[in-house]
Length: 282
Ligand code: PAF
Image (cartoon, rainbow, N blue to C red):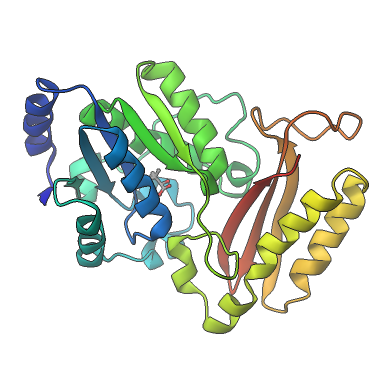
């Protein structure tokens, strides 16, 4: 497996690869890989001639220093997992200074307020940070296809905007959320909660299923009340937000028009760790 740590090596390899094929796939990650990432990498491996996985815990997308510092980092394990798919996959594993030189700051983007709701509202600046690193990766790796998980649904919408604005030739491929036996959406942050909380964590997806099953016959106000009750019935779980929005545009839910395609979004703080999930509900 080839692990590349600096941009000049990356540029050399990419210019060589681009002369042979344009079908380069990129799976951007922050490492600590789980089966959700591996599903993306497997899909990329099927659909592309060359696959790059980037592993970079991007400081500009964290608005909470504790969250950044406690983010799991396990390169060796990650490499082992990638190797189970193919040893021909390329890994880009840069340092913070390699990516940001001396200025760790985000570019400012205009996403027409798509970045101001849901995660963006609760993590100010988060999507400018995500977009900054995603744009840098797309620019240097020059992928034809990029792979993102639906667990971070709002992120896929932001990536679609970046592609439309700067990289119209790139195809965005999204993969369904992978869940553990409890129904909890896989996330690197799941490692940070206790076994007891993990045992209870199925309630997050159960609650989304409850919303899906009761969406047509129940008012938004009542759904919100039930969601809060169900989640906070567990003493260490706190609802950060629950919202229903139009799936494509993230526009607010219009209760008078249940025919549009709606998605429920939830964020629960479990022992202080933010866990997010979402589900198409009609
Ligand atoms: O989804 C993630 O892991 C990150 O937000 C990403 C896309 C790798 C950018 O740092």
